[in-house]
Length: 497
Image (cartoon, rainbow, N blue to C red):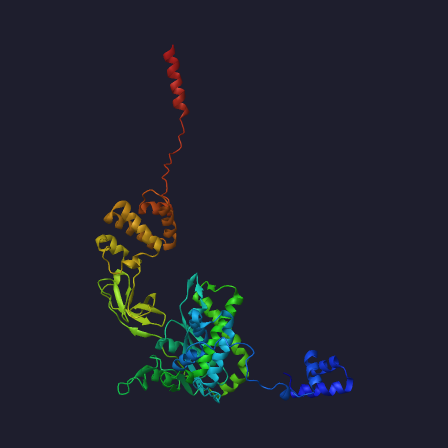
């Protein structure tokens, strides 16, 4: 069907030229369609009268009453799910070719008889008024660090007025990740806005005993953070994430942008977490570069930052138990046995722990995720275990003493070849060698030993890594005395006479 404007142009040109093809080209109409309207001399609204009859049998007539009833009872059902449900029924009369017809019918039902749709209302934002903060999972990016998948989140901060954004990698939706992400964003901005908006995450709010399941109150630590940066905390209603739509939308755009640049990079594997962080930072700076005009308006309204930043860690002082373990936030961590009985000072960061003895820094430990767990380093307990090999069999954290599946296979092989106790002792000697050299070097030699059929011991692995030096006995040079030789000749000649 053509428009009235096309019809008028077509008829006008035909009166001038009398040629259908020329008139059709000027009216942007197909020549066959032009011929039909010229011969009928009838406007489109009269020529194309609506009809109530069908031009072919309705393939959905048999099942549509049932489909409508199901949609009324459960409007959230998807059209494809319903189609596959009825397609599996031999009496439905449906075929694969009816898919598009079914989709159009369901869409029309939703528009005429379906429930009311949610309406989103565009908001007028003022520069420098609000910063929204939210976390978003980034597992779908499938980023790897040296071949191992990096399970991580982003603490994402967005200025709704200018769409400026900054994201910080983290491992959980914790208060420490909130502090780190917020302070990183404010440092990039060089100032703080009037309000800080979040959802009802437990990092910022908690349930009120007087209003269970409804209103939530702000955490004390969160209020202290907002006070430090002169931010007014605002939150959304419980179960209404659309009320923080700006940052929710930018979450999707951020991950889409990162996914596209990972494809352009040609690899999702990075040499280190620091390399990945630099990659993300470059993408963010590139995206923010297009928002400088409105960002300048925002920055003109920002408040100056305080002189110092808040500590991005919590302190605790665990005592090293007789098991050479410390407990931090329901998790157990092993430390060297020489620290047993000492009180350590631990700085608990969002992703790692820093351990101090007094003011002396000792080492870093990766922070465990989840509710409970244990991180036991075999290097911390191997020497005591060699003195008490019988404790290995029922050791609570024995799985931590297998650095890789190859070590587990080596343990089973040694026990099978030499017996339970001798095999365990041999395996502990292998672990000691791994502590002295490296897990990777020992693992390579273990794979060679496991590939062979004969018996082997820890000394075999040690000799393969560092063959014993052969002792070479150096003898002093022998210089014969010629005078003694002459004297011997004289004696022989005299004896011959």
